[in-house]
Length: 303
Ligand SMILES: NC(=O)c1ccc[n+]([C@@H]2O[C@H](COP(=O)([O-])OP(=O)(O)OC[C@H]3O[C@@H](n4cnc5c(N)ncnc54)[C@H](OP(=O)(O)O)[C@@H]3O)[C@@H](O)[C@H]2O)c1
Image (cartoon, rainbow, N blue to C red; front, side, top):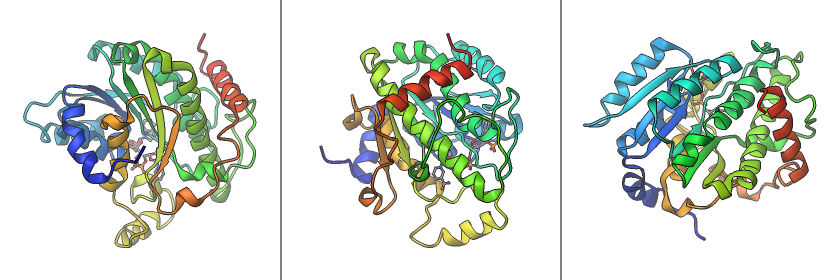
């Protein structure tokens, strides 16, 4: 099957997404905000999860201006806290009759280690455990929306992970800015492994999942890196770095393009030349995917 082009994506998007119920995490900035904007513009009913009420309200006002008849709701939750994720899932059930598209986009790159409210490495909690629990708590809504789609915003960084231990991947550790890169990469590998496990477990329930890398995108993700934002906004003028709207394109395609109907477990990279890179040594290890899933269930206390 040939991959849809950007123009075809834009043509397909409005009709496919109109009237669907979509959820995006981390819509207050960067790629998530552009995904949210694209969905609302295409006529989708949108609920977004954000951790800061003030930023959320500003985003809500912005998104309400994108459509003539908008349905935009927000739920406030810090995804690094399992308690907050559980509360958010309950609130989401009160807002939505079903879920057609779930975009797990929220993510962070902490340069220094921090411990989450539940005792895990906070970057792993935000990027993997919180989204994992949220996704599991929304399966009933996703089944009501079937055929429904999950889109995971992962990263090419996942390829750099040499070793991952399913027993210890969420343990808090000590690292500096350089070491933080490997923890970030691990969190993104977890996104990819979970995507593949969803493909194995939930396809028969009408739920598909695909992960992608948006490329190198100038966003708030670099805000913690000294001079990061300045360097990225300068680099944005080069072909190497994209703006957030470009970074959102593949997510919108995976969310709405009919050509992805029934496709699951994929990793799509939008980085030029990435197809030439060897796949991660861990990506095609079903035993590892299952072990990560089962350990994640234990850590977030899913039955
Ligand atoms: N930028 C890139 O080059 C790049 C490349 C590959 C993958 N990605 C992935 O793209 C995704 C989006 O990142 P971005 O580049 O758009 O960065 P961003 O501008 O920093 O956006 C991240 C979003 O996640 C939210 N968020 C962070 N921690 C959260 C938490 N604990 N609970 C709830 N929400 C939280 C942020 O909320 P606040 O507004 O409150 O901070 C923000 O809305 C991430 O998963 C990232 O790993 C980015």
